[in-house]
Image 1: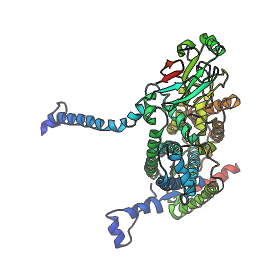
Image 2: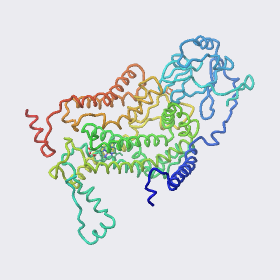
Image 3: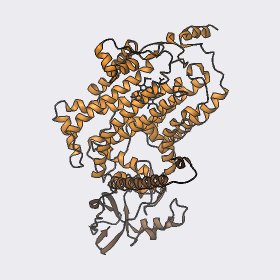
Image 4: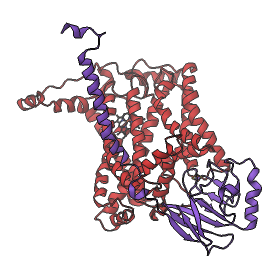
Length: 173
Length: 412
Ligand code: HEM
Ligand code: FES
């Protein structure tokens, strides 16, 4: 066995150690993955539900709050003044610059996910310094386009995927 | 330690057992006869009090789990069922919920004790770090437990805290979904939190064993901070400290019982008696009182990621304390300048706690910035610099002469 003491030369035993070790690691990882992946959203959660909302009853200047994927969606019918307000601020130095027109499909209708981009509270509509939304949790102010204007939230209220099925029906999701 | 006491089995049976399982030897050498500095004050009773707190939480928790249903449809009602129908359910639940607060009260005193007497310094760094791990695990456990009754504060507290993770660059979003098991706090979240809330106290138990093991290598620190030099400096743990510990625990229980029997909801939030509603955020989200200082730090900065990093940093910095404090003298008793900064630090933490419950605007926001700065300055500036320049007070030569030399210092 004297040749195994010669550390410089790789031996058959070294080869066996390394291959065994490598297979062990791969084996352990392939067992660990299901244990970790089960934490991820499951099939029933992921089956993205789409919802259809009748918007005919929403008066100009008011809004409807509906639930989608466990989160609230604000559907807001804006007045002409509100649209003008939103567009007027397009070129200000906003924290998350975006033009109002890029956030809507029809100017009259603003559809946003009602989840504060700071830490996930639900902002309250028609409140705050910009009269859009105000998040009570840590004081984020959003404007009438759902853009962040002041406070700790980093980005604008998210616009969910949606389409107008007809003039009075929106499909979200 | 050189004062080591050796166990001698007295009869045939104990001799037989000792050579097979040296349980009696262990109990005798590490509990009953363990040489303990004779000058420990009441701040040293909190280790025992904490152990009792942990045992209390585990016992009441296991019982609550027999009646609780971890499902969003049933959770809130099952807690009300415990309160109204289960025999003594109200008592067991109030012990568990107030017990968490008492646990944190005790751990804060325990940690401030260590900070003042330099118990984290060489050779007790590992004891301190294990303590920090325990503290971190306690926070996680308490946070998950608070979600279980599925009230409004449970739900929105969980939402806010899990979203903190989402601020981390790159991995943030997928990590959040992994914690939630979905896109918002919901049934999968509740179920995994219940499972982990059951598990973690036993992990804590394991770390506490390591903590005490590490403690038993150098032995206890003490109010003068000098190392034990011989038998003259110590007494046996039993009966001297068993009696002292039990007495202190009894007094602690009086406060505990005041909350359980006279004011069981004083430390909680009324909104948690409203069932969780994913569509309505309460006007004012506040975490449990023991997390308020960190919450204040989180909100002190207007930037999301910076706030989160500062908040985690406030705990992380504790792990480095043994190397941040450059003073060789352990006990704050002989550090005249340190004492002022220390008192200021305690007040600073209390103010941070107060601010955590306020709306972060105007004067409150300003104050939380000032107090956050001092919190970090204490660890990162005061302790490293002060240790090099401070002129220490004269020290006694040993634990046994400490009272004597204190009088001498006073007479000078
Ligand atoms: C479940 C929580 C904890 C339990 C059950 C526990 C238990 C104990 C016990 C029984 C002792 C010995 C008696 C005493 O000094 O009071 C001790 C000592 C100590 N603990 Fe803890 N502890 C806990 C948490 C912590 C935390 C969070 C820290 C700090 C970060 C900490 C730091 C220390 C230090 C530094 C010592 C040595 C103290 C000395 O002898 O001066 N412990 N602990
Ligand atoms: S969650 Fe809205 S401001 Fe923090």
